[in-house]
Length: 243
Image (cartoon, rainbow, N blue to C red; front, side, top):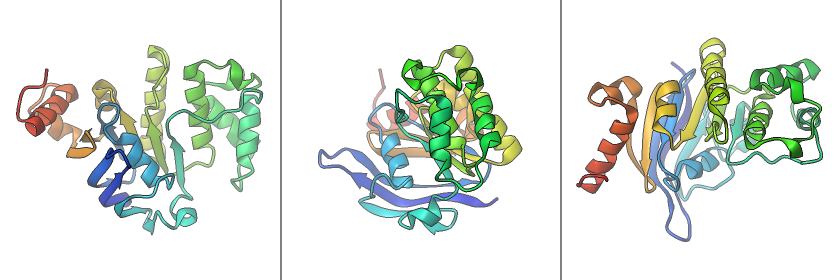
């Protein structure tokens, strides 16, 4: 399989001492890889480092064979939704896509219509985003990330604010694009059950440290669920029972 993303001993330490330390892993084409950890564990820090929004303190990041320091080359085939999508309240869903399309050659109205269909926002394409619910804003952010037909998607808590039905739909979109289009996904979540349902591999983060990186099958071989797997890894780190 082709390697899409590689992090080699990457650290990003902020002035308060928080961040992520010594992160090393790689992602192959078509895989869905989950970053699993609580808030403040370093998930967003890693994703910002990959997308060039933050400069690592040390280590190297390579995307499609290019160092992320060469942002134009490395990130050409990358779509991202990190934290909350930046939307203009007075613009419609369609307006946002038309504005974003200016930055991507070859994106036409048919593609804009397609991404709205993928994320379930077609009925609301002419509605101002200021009226959107949190879940609808998440879908809009995903539509913008998908607009250029990227081969690598970086998604930070993509089901945040979604109800049960919308969460299932979001998961199905990710799995379908990975299986049918070969799109690679790096998905961050603090919900073990969500990672378990969609990911091929899981990287456990805790307090900025990478505790493990296993296939889902290996993680579940000795554990009834990814939640139990996560707790076992944290327990090993602490050397005591996690309450």
